[in-house]
Image (cartoon, rainbow, N blue to C red; front, side, top):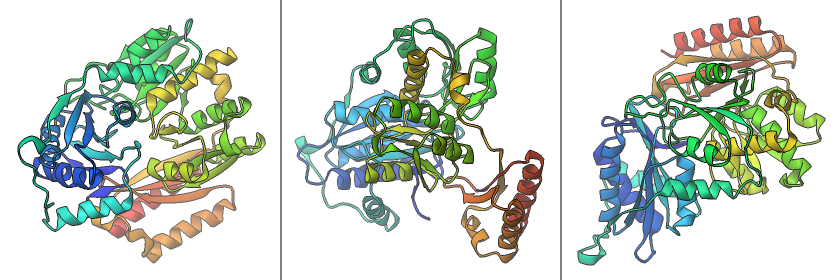
Amino acid sequence: MGKLFGTDGVRGIANKDLSAELSYKLGRIGGFFLTKGKKRPKMVVGMDTRISGDMLEGALSAGLNSAGIDVLYLGVLPTPAVACMIKILDADGGVMISASHNPVEYNGIKFFNNDGYKLTDEIENTIEEYILNNLDIEYIPESGDVGRKIRIENPVRRYMDFLKETIDVDFAGLKVAVDCGNGAVYKAAPELLSELGAQVYVMHNDPNGININVNCGSTNTSEIEKLVLETGADVGLSFDGDADRLIAADENGHIVDGDHILAICGMHMKEKGKLKSNTIVGTVMTNMGLDICLKENNIEIIKTKVGDRYVLEEMIKGHHSIGGEQSGHIIFLDHNTTGDGLLTAIQILSVIKEKSTKLSKLASVMTVMPQVLVNAKVDKDKRNGYLEDEIIKNKIDEIEKYFHGNGRVLIRPSGTEPLVRVMIEGKNQEELNQYAKELADLIEERLN
């Protein structure tokens, strides 16, 4: 077995890579090291709507209970709500069972500490060492020291009340189209937006365990584009399976991605004196158009490796208030400790309402440089092979020399799938398509 933890917890095909047995061990060993030294520790546990959630939650909770940890069971809830509920319930940590935007056959287990942050590498490495070497903790509680499972009443209500406190306007007069992706936000999103006064048109809010992310949600934006045009909505909001990311659409059905959202919200925060350190945190995948936009508005940008955990680490280190990814993971660190799609949605709607303007006008502050992303299918254990292959390296050098500084090539192995992602950015879309396909084909040929 290889490394367990990726950039976003433990993830794999449920009942195969991520089995009930592994979930039990993660609960027992992970919970023990996360709450070590705490008296009668308690951890919140939530999950998205995929069918394997019940199996994995049962095993995980049993593992936590066997380590003397009380499980505060939240049921189906967005990932950011789990992080939020740790503080609300004064818990010692939390676990979210979700594979986010991945297909239904996948699932994942993501831990949070008592501050709502993801685990340090040190703790993850300790958990991995125990599990991969078939070690077990020595603590075996008995009698009244065994953990219990306690069902928390209406956690969705508590999460929505928390979100309401982050804004000071209502959405009366706004028509909002929502694609819930048949995921964890299927209840919270339409209810919260309606309570805030918006007229809501909702789709894909009927999860059945196997339809999460299927031809819907933030990775299938054609659905929200169509719904906006059909309903005449002012804004479209599209969430992924666990609702830690958001992709928006303007009133014309044009997509407003994470880079645009960073520009809109970051500039608005600066106007209100809330942009700490006058800096926004992005990633190496951030479009060059955002760099240009922020420079024109005298705002700094710092870029990290891809992954919201790296964005968060940089935000904490530099005391920055907003950061995120093009994919729609946006972190408002003054409010929550992880990407929060619903929080991002109401922040965007607040800007629209406060400025009394259209989302298309707000998004026009940033001109997108054409980007092409092509996936090369490569066995998991060969994903980093491009680093040593001279023919691939020479091809990358050839493309970058051609651009003369007006474009770039970014190669990134997927953290969860057997893919190497090829991203090329520049001015000419036709050239980008050609080069991206050539490079992806070459990577597949050389590494397989």
